[in-house]
Amino acid sequence: MNDKPDLTEPRLPFAAASNWLAGAPVEQMAALLASVGDVALMIDDGGQIVDVAGAPSSLRGLQNQLGRRWIDTVTPDSRPKIEDMLSGEPGGRWRQVTQLGDSGDFPVRYLVMPLGVDGLRVAIGRDERAGAVLQQRLLQVQQSLERDYLAMRQAEARYRLLFDMTAEPMLILEADSRRIREANAAAVALLGDGQLPGQSLIDRLEAGDREPAIAFFGAVAAGVDMAPIRVRLGGDAAASLSARVYRQAGTGYLLVRLGAPDMSAPVAGDGFAHAVAAMPDAFVIADRSLAIVAANPAMVEIVQAASEEQLRGRALGDVLGRPGIDLDLIMAQLAEHGVARNVATIVRGLLGGRDEVEVSAARISPDRYGFTLRVVARRLRDLPPAERGMPRSVEQLTELIGRMPLKDIVRESTDLIERQCIEAALVYTSNNRASAAEILGLSRQSLYSKLHRHGLVGLEQLDD
Image 1 (cartoon, rainbow, N blue to C red):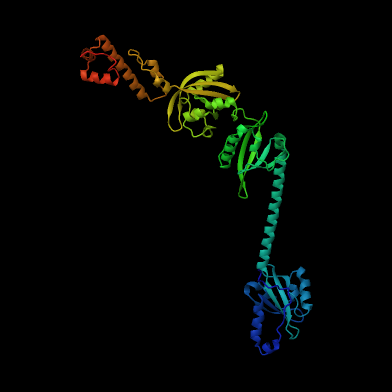
Image 2 (image 1 turned 180 degrees about the horizontal axis):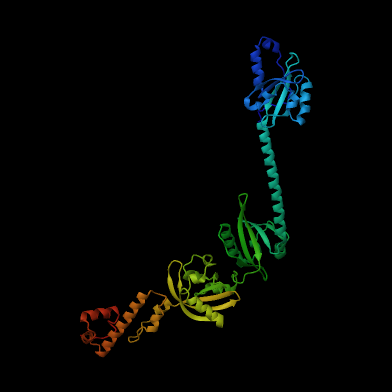
């Protein structure tokens, strides 16, 4: 509700003003006239200012205009208004003029009232600077809103033009229901229906691709940066599905692109893809820079990752091979022969685990390489113990380089030599422990300890 009085509305006079004001002192009447507005001017019958009263902040040099014609103290465009007020009927309306001041022009709204004494009139003025400032701000805000609205309309026009003219099928989906809100001409041509808005994109996919697509859209809506997946749209048509989430007016939307199918991404329902996913051996595809593009569940498990998405984009060298050795060897074989077979190396898990593996690799496209990893450490541990007299060779010890620290390799070498010497002494003494200890320069107790440590007790029938 606006409580501000309307200054243009005619005012009703007192019904019996002579009864109340006839004996009023002159000083009180002057104070009353000066306090009615922010400024009060006494104007004689010739239109000259003979006296000034008001607040100092509103006078702004008007007290220096005494003796001048009032019409000469305003801007030229305000002079007709002064003439109208001076020649008008008593009880005229308020008029706004631009008053000249010492520090610049300022707006004042005046009401001229005759005093009935020698043609004197009083001009009661109200300072309109605050209102002018608010009006100016309102105008600036309005202009700013108009500029923003125009910029928004231009941006929307550019978006519409780009959205409709792009050659790739583009869709806008509701993040919750995955229903189509908008589709460009390429999407309509691909999906073959001009009434796409309101329909579910999931229903347009092959049955085997619907669950992976739902999981994909759910992850994207949650803010996860997902790599594109391949989907089938019916018949032989396939596409690479990528999406980004954005919010508008508190609602989530998905900007979806249906591009050319990415052959490195498996398609749900594809028998070959299922076979790769079910393989017990790890399988991984890397690009030209050896960044992981795709991996099967066995690869995810062997590197201790949480999901395939955690591996995508990661350098293959972070998890496979001894740094600067094995992958360089594999890539050299690929460059020379196109394939690499049974390269012994190690795989390093993201949580610190380590396994010995055999790697085979092949170039599957100009910028894609496929790798299979078969764990061999468990297989070697499951083999039956080797016969006595067939100890580990020096060649086997050298294979430990890069897999364990040098001090551990030296310890392995020392144990190998010690075991071979003990076994040779036992053979030389026909398995007589006392004689074997004597020729080795050991006490019988020390020899027994070493026999236990090397697992030779029970393998030999030794005499006392």
